[in-house]
Length: 252
Figure 1 (cartoon, rainbow, N blue to C red):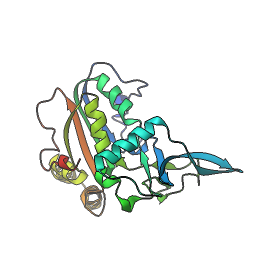
Figure 2: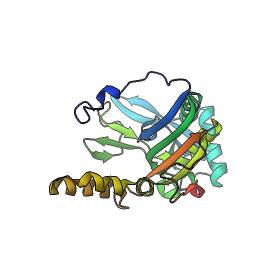
Figure 3: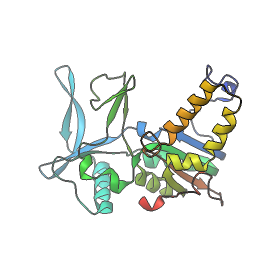
Figure 4: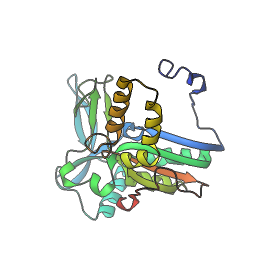
């Protein structure tokens, strides 16, 4: 931040705890996908929790009895989707959403929360074609699915169940503002107008780079449709800019 936005750096403050009585805007870009998740599978018709064990000097997955919290979460998913999980199905559940939103809600007196991330509504998240789960690892911009390959050196992520976000946020007393694709959110927020204004005084090379960046953020084959935006609020009557164009909350 100091190198790329030196004029703004003195405004950056690292918080150990959220401030009480906060009135403002909370923005999270690819935050929830980095939360710890619990993995589960179905073995011999029974729910099992995937834990990490040592086999010699190597980390391996080990099926164990699931925690009560995981059992409740998986049963709730099955009840919501109207179908049970098949033998061998593997997936993830984020059990940190409720305490996280509870903390945000306690701090937020009035304002809005907008989160951009990749994932699916619940009925799309737990489809049979995703029977291997969504856990992914990234190292130097290369993706793979082995979290034990480079421990401590790689990013480990899981796709977001946006329905779970809504449940956790509304349980904490927040109001859903909207849910849409990243492309629709950015375009409705005036991305093209801001990009056009920024490009006016730029060189041809700078304009080409800006155009490429806009396409990366909005095109369906890039990040435009694979990323989604979801918003929550407290004490705000108006619909947030970005969600007034194409709200897809019905998918949740």
